[in-house]
Amino acid sequence: MRASAKYGAVAGLSSLVLASVAVAPAGGAAVIDAALHGTVVAAGRAAAAGIAFGRCPAVEKLPKSVQCGTVKVPLDYTDPSGRQIELTVSRVKASGKKAERQGAFVYNPGGPGASSMHFPLAAETPEWRRIAKAYDIVGYAPRGVGRSAPLSCQDPVDFLEAPTLAPTHPSASYKMERVAEAQAYAKGCADKAGATLRHYTSLNNARDLDVLRAALGEKKLTFMGASYGTYFGALYATMFPSHVRRMVFDSAVNPAPEQIWYRNNLDQSEAFESRWADFRAWVARHERTYHLGATPEEVAHSYEEVRARLAEKPAGGKVGPGQLHAAFLGAGYYDEYWPMRAKALAEYLKGDPQPLIDQAAPDPDGAKAAENGNAVYTAVECNDAPWPEDFSVWDLDNTLLAQRAPFETWDNAWMNLPCAFWPAPRQQPLDVRTEPRELPDTLILAAERDAATPYAGALELQRRLAGSVLITEEDAGTHGIGAGSNSCVNTYLEDYLLRGETPVRRASCAPHPEPDPVSLDRRAEQRKLPHTV
Picture 1 (cartoon, rainbow, N blue to C red):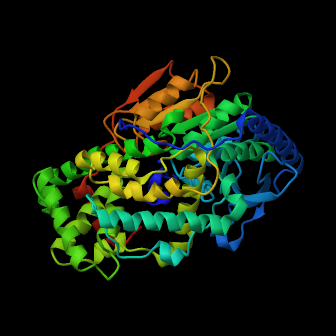
Picture 2 (picture 1 turned 120 degrees about the vertical axis):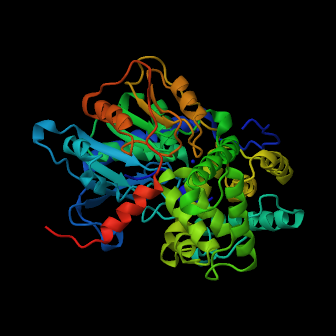
Picture 3 (picture 1 turned 90 degrees about the vertical axis):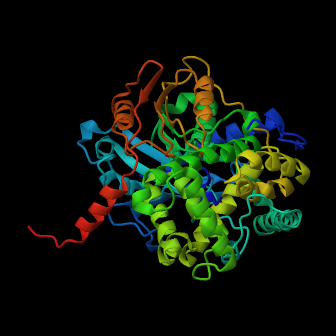
C-alpha cells in the first residue's frame, strides 16, 4: 500500500502476538526534556518572525486566492540553534467579517507523507464555507514532504516500476525477493538522508505543529488531523495540552504505545478484508448494472479472473496484478470509488481494458511526489517505534493473518518491511494520555467500518484523552468523514468548530447513502447535454 493511501484521508493509516521486537535506545527523559525546551525556543523565534505570506510559487499549482509562506523549525529539537529546515505553508484568509474571525484553522490529511498545501481550496466548497468565514484556512507540508526538506529513498522511476505481482499467498522464493528489496530500500534511505534520517518522526511533527501555531500568531491551536494526523495530533495534545483551543481527530489511529506501528498495520490488514467484502456485496446487489456476479463470491471470482489475465498479459503493458490491487484498495477507503472500479472491472471482462488502465496505470508525472510520500511514510513509521527485526516473525504473523484476511495482508507487510532492517535509532512511543480538565473538549469522528483506521482506535483515543467526545457514523466505512457526505457528522463538526458545542460524551449518525450506479450514470448523461439558459 502506498503512503498516499496508507493512513491518509480525503482532503475536502491485531490480535496476533508481537514477538522478538528489538528495542533501541530512545534517549530517555533527558532527551524529551531537551526537545521540549527546544520547542519553546523555536516557537518563540517563530512568533517573533511570523510568516511572510505572499504569492505561491508556481510549483505549488495554486491560484492567486491562496497565499504561501514558510516557517523555520529545527531539524533537531535538542539543538534548537543548529540546522534549520523550512516548512511550506498555505493560507486563505477568513472570508467573514472581522468580528466573526476565530483565528487560524490548521489541517493535516495524514500519511505519514501527505501534504495539505492544497487544503485552503476547500474554503470555497459548501462543506467548509461556513467554517472558512470564521477561520483562516491553513495547509502545510510536514517535514520531509514536498518542498519541506524533502526526503527520498530511491529513484522515482524505480518506485513506480510496473507491472508487478501481488500474490496473496506468496512463495518462499518470492518472500526472499521482497526481503532483499526491503533491505535495499532501507539502505537507500540511509544513503540519501544520512544523519538527518532519524529526525523524521511523529514527535517532531507534533513539535513542528507548535512552532507553526506560534508563527501564525496563535496563542492556542485549532487543528484537525485526519487518519495519521490524529496520531501526532494526540501527541501534541499530550505534550502541549495548554496550547490546544479546539482539536478534531477524524478517523483515529489507535495511539496505544504497543500498537505503534507493527500491530496497527496487522489490524489494518484484517479490517480491509471486511471492507473488501462490503464492496463485493454492493457490486453483487447491482448485478444488473455490472454483470460481475449476483453474490459476493461470484464478484470475487470475476476479480480473480481479471487478476489471472493481467498476470499473463498486463493491460497497456503497465497494469498487472499489483496495479489492479492498488486500484481496488482505494475501494476499501472510499465507497465513492465503488462505481468506477466496478465499471472498470466489467468493461475489462467485456474486452475494453481502457477504463482499468486509466484508473490503475502508474502516473509518470506523479512519480516524484509518490516516491517522496512513501519515503516519509517509511521513515516516520520506522523511526517512531520498535519493529520485529527477524523476518520469521513477520512471516509467521502475516501467514496466519492471510489465511483469514488475504486481500491486503502481504501487500501491507511488504510496504512496511524496510522497518525490519532500519539503520536509524528507534524511539519508544509516547504514552498518549491527558488528565481530566487538562485539555479542552476535543472531538473524535469515526466510521464504524473504517478499514484504514479501525474503529477500536477511536475508542482507545477517547479513553486516553479526558473530556473527548466521539461521533460515530454507524455501519459505514469511508475513511475520513469530516466535511464529507454525511450532514449529521458535518453538523457536529460545525457546532464544535464554530461554537465549541459538543454532545456530553458520545453521539451517533446514520450512515450516508451508498453509491447508486444508476443515478450516477444518469448524472453523467446529464453532464453531456448542452447547457442552455
